Image (tube, rainbow over all chains, first blue to last red; front, side):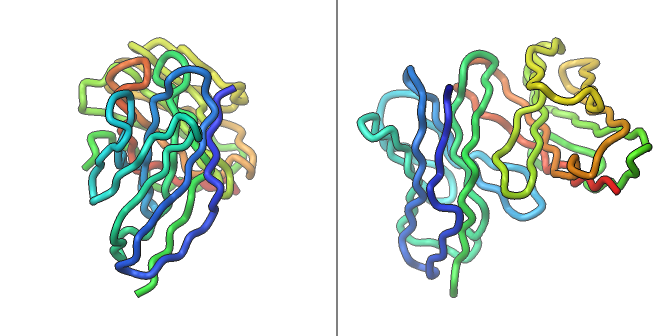
Length: 113
Length: 114
């Protein structure tokens, strides 16, 4: 069965520092992969997605992610974190028909001034 | 405004009440979804509707009853809920089937069952 693992439940970084959030997936075929962000009391907003082609994907808000098939990973990165990036981040893989998304448990990001 | 609107934003209901959650999308999408988000648990897919037809029901208890009268509206009818049903209920929509589009989410309804 398809699954997504986000190993880090909480991460704290200082404002201006670089960020990497880890995501590992389990999927038999070529995966469709996504990163979403959720601010408190809000729904999920799509940051970026990967389907095929260039393995380095650019998203909104200065985020990027790199697909590594050999490692079954799709890690999210940002070179310089802003206080407004504090939120919860979800990695997801599209599974089967009807565009079903399977989500990881999420990583909560805290940003220190 | 994300294009997917959920009402109400907050709902407190007793275990014997009947209430409904509403979701509306103005994006022209042809698929809609209900997810449940509980504390410290991954998002759980509850129902999938494609072209107004329910195509998936992930072993959800019958006290949750979805309805999709048209491609723009999705409801979740609630009755005889339990305290463990307290959660954030998220609605989402997408254009295609097969994973390419990603979802557009609403802001959710925070449900508390007392």
